[in-house]
Image (cartoon, rainbow, N blue to C red):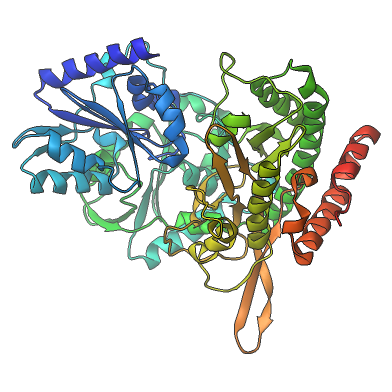
Length: 595
């Protein structure tokens, strides 16, 4: 990888010299501002060798750096070796930000350039302001990867398909009507939608253009008079074409979106644009009245309907049964020394594939054994994967896409002889996880107000974790979705009934082990207080036991012990019908009451 990245870096600098560009910023996203992107748009990966989901590369004629967050510090340090790129750590006191670094590296009147297709309007505007304040020039039409990237992967061309209403629970016509009602309330006549998950949800269509995400690369324009899907024709077969025609959506070629916005949208039309989603290139193509606001689709999509909730509960049962088979197999084979972290990932796919509703992983499995578990977003490779033994901790973070729901679970298990330190730290994490899981809170509560519940036990011992505690989860969509989350950073979005969010505190000790415990939880009504109003709570959706062999019972209260036992009773009762006798015996042992 390092030889390729050095070659690619020099090709980039040659392209910069030809047009007198002094610095270029390369994000790890696509024209839709996606978190997970198709290989065709992985320009940052191509030039740096870094493959994490978050990270931004910056190249000058003499220096190069990659900025990423704490989840990827260890991974980035490894992947950037001999690449020509230095690692810069985001959100760490004393570490320079990208713009602070550029202010030192660049001279007056030099050009900072980006590919405007890969930058949102907001981000491009911020960079333009930075350049203006520092005597620099800014260009948004620098896209050398289109010509210098040899053997670039083709743009994805998977077939789109209709997500049946028996799983979606609401017709596309109803969703379009609700979206346009919100658009009108926000003072606009139309909305231009670049976010792939929002398009998929609105139209009840799915595809396979992005790994682990059932999405169709496309754009959507909606108004009362015009409903247009911009998509490559090869993706739309006769059945999907008839479906789109039936809901009043016309199809225009994906590459024609810029011309359409420039020429077909009347100047008098007020178009709603989310400046954090729409690219700078397409945002500037619209020559009409623009209403800049957050997309109204995300909060609509976040509230799951009763059909989606019921489907997710069913998906969790099938998923839990598959994981029983996986962990039983791990325990039976770990002592042989013949299976690795990669084998665990492959076995999980095998166990889940039994379900006819299974459509793949919701993200690449994180199977971290011993010290690899301390790498928050570790990705095992055949050449570096650890072989499992009958000792130490194994952290498995895994999820699946089913037609009726998306799953995401993390369990940390001891493969034998747990140490006092491992049991202590596991129990600390578990206590935070349980505290958040049993929380009751008033309507109007934000995730940031609950985050400390999961951290307080670690804080008391001057330990912490640097990632968020919870993220929203889609329904047969992205495993990460907004607008809600549970983290220290302030987010004005309040938790509402119907939202599905993760509960995943962790603790990581570099070179030793990592611990994370994750369930998905559904926000539901908790009851009404005459004096203080309505309250909410969480219903735990994930169904799989904790490792009671790792629990230090002396650290748990009676309430926490009862909470674990009640959860294990539900896990056993709901998973047993899916299991054979041997699997039931394994589960019975794992869910036996703790005293």
